[in-house]
Length: 116
Image (cartoon, rainbow, N blue to C red; front, side, top):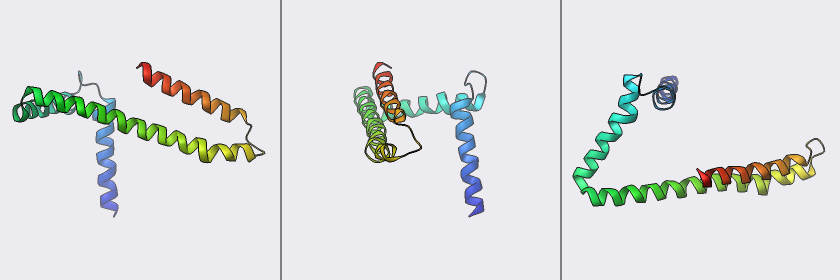
C-alpha cells in the first residue's frame, strides 16, 4: 500500500512539474511531454484516419471537453446553491453577504469562461 502511494505521489509530482510548471523552451523533458508527444500522437491519428477524419475527431473532442467542463462546473455550483446556501441562511455565525458574494463569483466565472 505504501509503495502504491509513493508511486502515485511520484507520478503526480512528475506530471505537475513537467506538464504544468516547467517551461518547454528551457526543459527537454517538458518539451518532450508537452510538445513532442502530442505532435507524434496527432501525426499518428492523421496517418491512421486521414486529415479530414482527424479534423472531425478533433472538433468532436473539443466539443466533448466543453460539455464535460460545463457539467463539472455547473454541477459543482448547483451543489453549492442547493445544499450549502441553505446552511448560510440558517447560520448565526456566517453572514448572508457570503451568499451574495458567491452569486457574484459564479457570474464572474461564467462570464470569464464565455469571453475566454
